[in-house]
Amino acid sequence: MHISLDSALGRQRRLNSVGESVLQIAPSAAAAYSLRSLTGGDPDVVRVRRSSGGEENFTASGVASGAMLSYVTEARTGWNIQATFNDAPDGTATITSASSTATTSTVSFTGSGTIRVLPKSSYVAAEAGDQVVFNMSVSGLDSAMTFRIRKANSNTTIGSSSVNNGDNQDVTLNLTASSGYTGGYPHFTADAGSGEATVTINSVTVNGKSGFVETWYDQSGNSNNAVQETAGSQPKIVNAGSLVTDSNGHPDIDFDGSDFLLKTSFTQGDLAQANTIFTVAKLNLAQDSNRKIYDGTSSLKRNMLFLSTNGSGEFAFFADDVISTGVTATNDKKLFSALFNGASSELFIDGASGASGDVGDYPMSGITIGKNHSGDLNFWLGQIQEIVIYNADQTSNRAALETNINSHYSIF
Image 1 (spheres, rainbow, N blue to C red):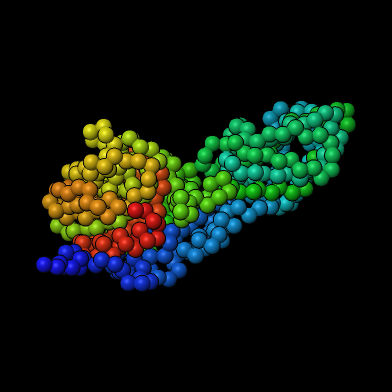
Image 2 (image 1 turned 30 degrees about the vertical axis):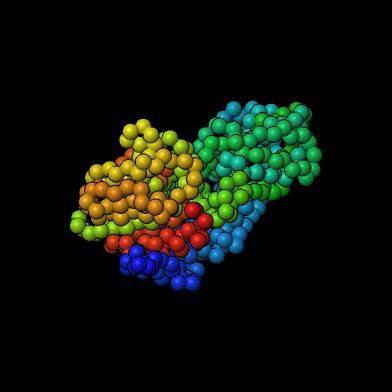
């Protein structure tokens, strides 16, 4: 007797129609995060902060076309804060005159010692890995001066060069500060001998190399945007001047083990309500434990996570109880399809059944992407490309959604 594939799958959609997006296949998502369009239109997908200063929203096409990368890496010229020179604290070099505009600055001094820009703020908006170029004209030095950028609100040098007398010379500093927003202030030690020296900074240019996700926009229409306002905890989308991508060239968001995004107020339904979540992610560290893709924001939570309860580094998920897949994590991108439905919960990996069982009925009161909801625990170390959350059982649409996702990312 012939049994058709459609009959075998029952009511489950086998393939999405040509041109359908995720939210056209299965509308009414509670939250939907991706760097591609899930709507069929061209929605804002991320707000990006660049290491050279400034933030801007970008649509899915803006990310894919290179517009976002161009914004992050374009040269930014001028002071972030207009410079004011000071001869404190030693006073051995005496400033005779100083002036500054939004772009240029000049200081003349006698004697020798330290001259810096005070207070110690972010006069130069730049971070680790960025390149800062000062075009300088220097005269009257008795010997080479040491010119530095120091980290904002610190005496830590993050770039240094020896500078001699000369006109229109480029002094290039590749910043070595630790990750996280730094900025910096110029600081130099110089000797004018028995005369007077003049240092003019004709221009300051920052060649930014990094872009960070400040907001991952929710495409569901429910405004459940995931936000990170603390610069040092923002995941990267541009690294070392290049867009973060997977092996197929699709844009990615990179979580380095200390980053996360947060939607503090979110209701995923009542205790008895089924929920379905589709996630595309890659873990960069095999055989590790407790690396969470996302979590709730309270002790009553629904989780999809990388969890090792038996030391073998298995993929698993839980709310009140744990079900493990028996699949050991590797450095490969995976598509996770998770149905939270009390005793009938299931986790699929790359379209294949991974685990089933009872995970309880606890709802999420918020969404934490990239870490445990409580404290600095269980950070994700790897990339996340897509998370779509439904306050409903999407079993009937699962195959079609997995087909759509896989056809874009080529996961399996």
